[in-house]
Image 1 (spheres, rainbow, N blue to C red):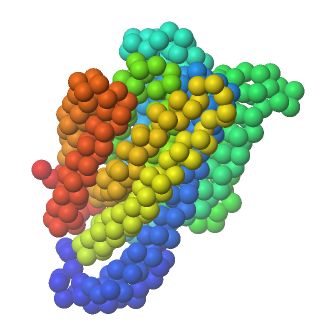
Image 2 (image 1 turned 180 degrees about the vertical axis):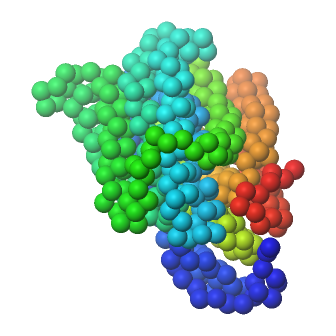
Image 3 (image 1 turned 60 degrees about the horizontal axis):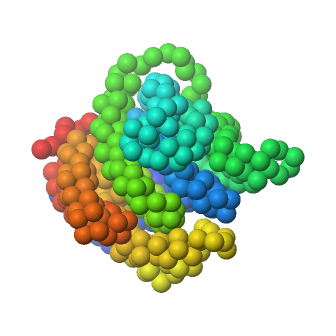
Length: 484
């Protein structure tokens, strides 16, 4: 049962330790929750930024190598990310499941370890069909109407990534395990090492340094795949070296099935995958629409997309932290804590994304110039990219709020209704806006980006309404039923 109102007002000892419950009705409780949130969110945001820096490294290196290679890498990476997002759903279920367990039983190890082991099982099961999809990247892009030269080049980038995908998903399982135990730092160090590895690999294999062959686009794909393998191996080592994490003995009984946990992972994870399919599918459609406007427009779109991807990692980090905090509160059956976790995360997101939007609007030209070296045709790409970056700057708050709200709902194990909200926002409002503006009003890529902005604004509003309702009506069960 929920604590009585009088009990909610009682001030217990307030700690910034993520494992301790924070419950009080005054300002100290909100400050303590904000502190706990930032303690978890900052390394998470840095980890996500480092993870996206792998793609940024590829984009910058290939942009300076050849703008056609840059355009092809965008298409190939889009197919890869589509597969990665699908596989990410079950891996994303690990954090809220563990958080609910630890909220109720902070010292539990047996059930937590079983969740992680079944998470690794789910990663391998999801990888099998997704690797097959990546092996046919060129046929998929040709079917979707892309130019043959770009489709074939994109395949050279995506096929090496297919062999790194299982390791990428397994890394996410281990990372989410560490995050749920409020130990996000090892994942950050691992991703920093991975970025440096990918940078060295790109430098060596794209341009043919250190006595290695000059492979261009293929070299970038190989370097990225090797970095994905390294991330999993390094995360495994980090867990073994972290006392709080290695005590769960994850390798023990690794091959022993746990049907209940595996079923719950897929029960929560598949709707998350559906959300990722809907979102990444919409983004893929955006890229494909922009692809018909030529290489200069695609390259400009790639630059703006890379910029907004970097800033989106900030609310992703805050959102993942909020999902853990909300999950702990739900497991502890503390409704007041749930509200503080959700509202604190939304406020932090608005503050951070406001600063990002202002910086993007002011320094749009300088940001675009970072991606291209001086060369023929490059000024046209930069001039085309600047308005797209301005649009991205305008929707930073909406993009951040929707991401944070969505992750917080996941932490409360509310996944079905948000899936329908994502579907309506992107595929009804967004698709109509993108197509109508880009072709109907002949705004081309700019119309696509404005349509995306409208979709994100609607999504942010609807998810905030949903989050407010769920936090007000949350029932105190370890796995709350879906609400209409």
